[in-house]
Every structure is written in C-alpha cells, then in structure tokens.
Image (spheres, rainbow, N blue to C red):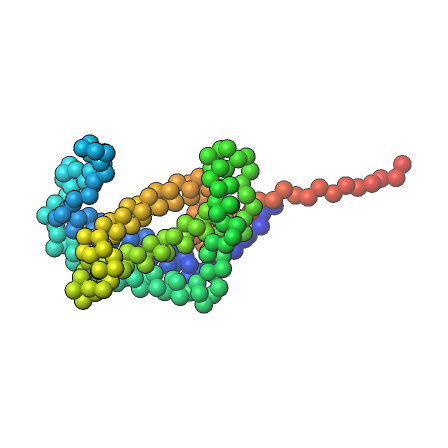
Length: 228
C-alpha cells in the first residue's frame, strides 16, 4: 500500500529552486572578483596547508583577468539573491512555516542523534516531524548566512556609504574576510546537502519537485477465527 504525504508547499519549492542558479552565479562571479586579490590561506607556522586558490585553479576554470565581468554579474545577482531571500523569510513568517524550521530545545540533542545515525553508530534514526533537529539547525543557519552575506557584501560594495556597517564588521578587510568565509560555508553546505539527498533517496528529491512523498506501508494483517 502507498500513501501520498504532502511535504513542501509550492512557494517553498519555488524559492528553493530559484536560489540554486542565483547562488551558483554569485559564487562563480565572486571567484572572478577574488582573482584580483586572493590573500587568504590556511597555514601552520611557515607551512601553507591550503591556498585559496593556486594559479592552476584560475587557469583551469578560465577565471583570470575577468574582474569587470565578475563585478557586473555579482552586483546584478546580488539584488536577486536579496529579494528571493527576503520573500522566502516573509513567506515563512506569514504562513507559519517558520515554526517547522527554527530550532527548538530538542533540536541540538536530535542533531547529535542524527549524526550518530549517519555515521552508522546509532542503528535507528530519531523520530522527526517535517524536519529533524539537524535540518532545523542547518536551514536556519543558511538563512542567517544569507543575511551575513548581504551585510558584508554591502560593506564591501559601498564602504563609504555604509561606513558604520563596514566599521562594525572590522573594516573593509574584515568584511571581505567574513564574506569569503560565508562563501566557503555555502560550498560546504551544498556538498553535504547533496550527499544527504542522495543518501535519503529519490523520494526526498521528488518531494522538492512535486511537493509530496510516497510512503509505502505494509498491509495490515487480519486474523479470522473459525469455529470447529
């Protein structure tokens, strides 16, 4: 037996899928801008562990000497990113969807249980409503990251006009560093998110396209008593 479970409203699906190409263009155009000044690296003492990014990376993706193009794309799609994000937040507030997204007192404990289950340490997944604790934390964090990207982006884009904001974020260089860290966070979120969707299977992916999941249930057994 199969049962249809309605999961994602049409508006949520639209906001989700519209944001995918917008975020892709934002990261791509951001790399075109970052090429012009790429000072960030992770090092231990005098040993560089990770360089963001080696010259071969720019050459392979043809990112070199495209600063003006990157700025043009970035500043246009910045407004699309902001508008889509604000409409999404507004919708969740008006519809009450935020109650299913914002972490509650049990979310962090549930997130730990989900992690143990994903690592194979815990055999059964914790019971959940529409979203489990880990999803609540992750989806709320991505909204806050979007706000952070918008604020740090404005501080970089107009450091004089938004002098107070720029100063609050540690000056131009501080705001640019936070902007870069948030971008790395988006990439990590995307990789983990896609991996989790693949792990969960087609049903989860379909729910973000059609809005529903199909639950398979075993037929109930009926016992019949016969008189001898």
